Image 1: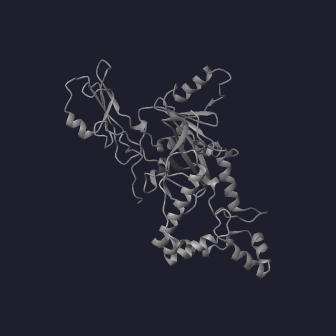
Image 2: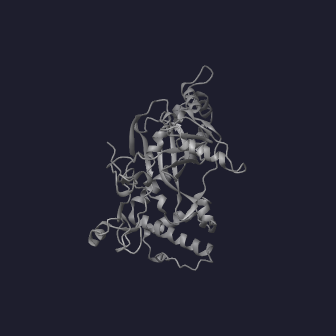
Image 3: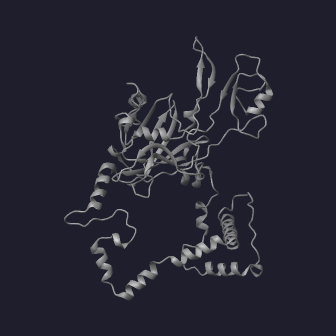
Length: 424
């Protein structure tokens, strides 16, 4: 499958940074804050010039007063902030800006994509002579902007698109998944999780974003990943070992804890398993790597269990894709996007945190084609195919099947990990 330039841009992850030893980062940042005999303390989070070292402040005070005023006026953005706030609060001006932007984007698409035969809806603008005086004044002000990067040119076409599924967030508030409290000298690890697209295995799509403490473990992170494979219904077997049904194990308003499957995680060519058995997923992946041809074989080693591996003990690279395998063949890729010290303005407890979850796409009922399906019916000759996805009302309307071999499999309800709760 060949990717278009837009798809390749969306699926691109990286480039990776230099290796960062998390424990050394926390220690060095703490030393900067504490200072030494040679150097004064340097606040990691500096909000004003008062927190800068004396040598830096002295360089500013030695400048002539007119030079200070020139630099201050040049760096000041109060006028831009006031103008922006006035525009956003005024419905007439905000509507004018939105319509103008849509018309500009439409013109760029029409110019750049001459081979596309699909007609786009054109945004119509009011005649300049009929515009409100406030809109005319705003238009002239924007036209007089001297920023060369302000106007959109035809080269902006590859970077303009409509919102996609990963751009939305199911959560209304930051979701606290645990009770771990942050300490003063502790790093926050920001992680983004990606999944393969079902229609294109080479394309990765963001599924969730999380924040963890450096003192937490890889198992805490794995537990925080929302995944439909963690909601697979439990099989009901008879004495002969045959499957006779399924039951869903749903815990309301709780994160999906993978109780029925093992997992393995690969970070910097080190495999971390769950440690529940000697032959866990990490050992199986390690053995599989040994059977690959030498030109395809990747040199990996086995590490300690995920529950015993803290983030502070790892050496990571920012924006480097790492790998998670669980529930048989369910894969996730994740990248560490940021590492920084904990700030007093950050949440004090509740880690790990989930800050974004992409809304899942539900299968539609094949009978009414209007609402999401909740059951997968296997072996029912009335439906014409097996398995058959159907919603609750349509299945009740069909009535109970007469064939005892018909299996009714409940589909994942997307409740564990996606439900949001307001902060306390």
